[in-house]
Figure 1: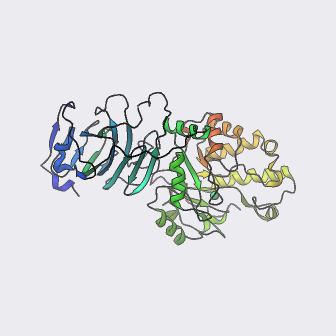
Figure 2 (figure 1 turned 180 degrees about the vertical axis):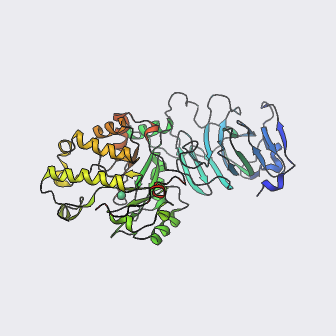
Figure 3 (figure 1 turned 90 degrees about the horizontal axis):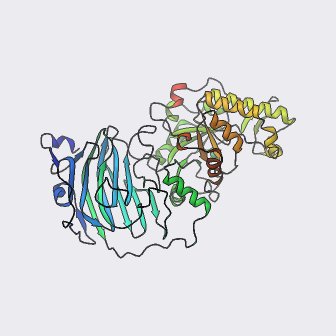
Length: 487
Ligand SMILES: [Zn+2]
């Protein structure tokens, strides 16, 4: 919308950056329009093109540096990204983007999944990383960063994406020691050499420097909290890909849980015979309700009949789809649901295991899913013999089917499966992983404890973690649905 007005008006401004003795003060409690009509009053531009209504950042490291320094504030910035451009809004900085890290960074990156930086807009980088894309390129959006004493919040189009309450003695890995709250300059910087940032209105509200901090837990963080914080600081994708809105649990509650502990969620309905979602129209209704929520949109494909109930085009709206091998029909024609003792028949445990492994192979070979969830789950009657029944040969058959079909393996936080040994073998074979809880209600969200153990024990790295496929690369569109059910 701003772009057309501009043609012919752009001039390139490059000014040396000098800060000393020229700080301006913003009046507390009032909103200052620091948009482009007043740009040169409030910002020092570096390698940007600007006119009265818009600023374009195109070159790598092009930036606007505030002439004012702030402790507490609300900064609301309207912008648009194109062509793979990404960069940051940084605050509490020294004013020099090349200096050692001081202050925090909020990411601006609207590239599709598996393109560019895996973190997306609204990420409070390396503290509360965000991997959910809520804005597409070529679209104007509003980014709002707020600092009130020890509480940082980041909103995108009014959606709370990330927040962080800095504790009294924050722990930082080497190199991030300066990533703490103080006061300083705001910098809007483009960090890639591709595409553009187009910047429209900017409003800054300076807040009192004397706001009281929010109470933080006086006890030192436990090992799980420390592990989650450290993985965030290393940029590790922390996502619970397998959440459900069950037992009255709301999206807001799930997201709050994730923000508090430092990870994202993927949320899915259960789709299949005798489940809440049984056709395209219900599937699309669900998708439309969830469309703007800051979670990954997933579809859980249930039973083996799901392939007959939905069309590839409807399915392809979702960021990813997944299924398990807990529902299938045995050699005597009994449709079993392995988590229900009355519906599960283990006449002979070895024969049962051979059938189970065969079913997993068939599902992975035929059904175009992205993730195999609740993997290696055994019914209660033989669950205690997991280590003995999941022989290396059986593990390797499943691992081969995962690898052959490019299906990621869920590390399930609730059931604590598959075994660490299985995960190590799968990693060696190059299988990708997801983390998932598969919560059964509104009070069994955990903190991915078993997944953290797996990361540690199997030495998982960020590259081992599955990320959603971009639009146009959906498996269900490329592979289609099988003509008959796996059974
Ligand atoms: Zn589930």
